[in-house]
Length: 187
Image 1 (cartoon, one colour):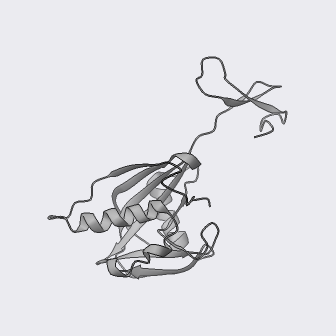
Image 2: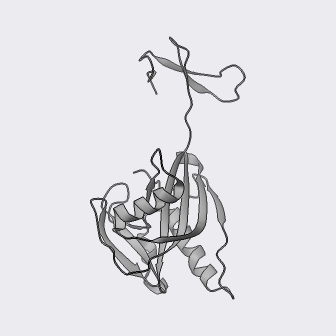
């Protein structure tokens, strides 16, 4: 950050009084510019024994497979964001079951929430962000063509949890550091 979004003057990194982190602070009006992680919300849509994946039509990771997900917008809940992103990217209407993975992607200042969702009808498509969408059984998943570590994690947890007796899908909390995740979700 170079300039204050309030008055347009230059900003500098400094430790505001009473704070414990460096913050961009305007030299002219004194405004402190807090920067917080971005929220990414999406779904792991399930239809029968298959999951819905989308092939990315945007960078990064153009042509790689992912779950439908994207940045949360102001004025919506995480659930609404997950539903919207699934509709936008996969043209699919899903029914949310539960929050399934919560991943702190520390090195890119993101938090990703993936909801387990039912895809009641095998109706889906593509969009300007998606080359194609397709249902995959576990043995068909293109593991070497997945866009992000977070997606690989969610799918691996899902297929393992589905095999439990009885199947159980606990909320998974994950924290990724740079050495664990060299694939960065930027949309």
